Length: 206
Ligand SMILES: [Ca+2]
Ligand SMILES: [Ca+2]
Image (cartoon, rainbow, N blue to C red; front, top):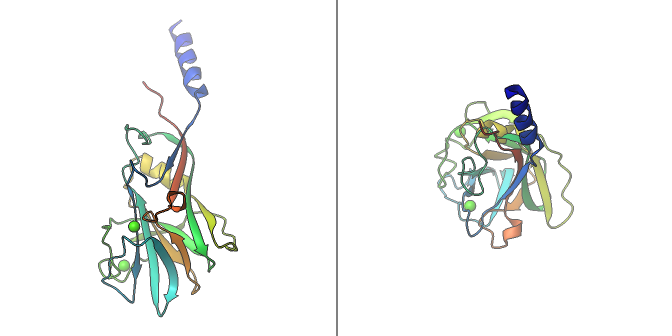
């Protein structure tokens, strides 16, 4: 009899609908920190820019973009409970400038919102030490419109953070010299800000 009750409880949990969160800077959430660092202005803090650029040759020096979503794991409103099973996670940015392919790499070291090219020691290298060598998978199509949503598939990374790995966000690295720009979390149009969409199953209560 006891085993039967356990079975019913398990089935009940398995059948509950997954939850979806759309995490974006707004009146109640301000945890998306994004900034650009630029080799030619190596001490300049650009955290408040409303547009950010990634370009391996921006007037002769590299530009990189750093981004993280803070405080997304926990039991509060709008958070993903620790040890949830992530069904899907997608990072969406609104790009407005066609350019060469940009790869997204998980950051492995902490960085401050006032990060600069110099305080990250010649910017970020995807060397397995500062940022992961692994590129997040996504389908990159050439940006043809003036304004286009670009999606990065980040399920594995969000699962790692929900499992307890440190969340230092990502770096966007451009593979070529044709810059690629998007609207930051400081842009006045809310719908143009970076969005992290996560669908998950919360852990089953014990
Ligand atoms: Ca910013
Ligand atoms: Ca570095």
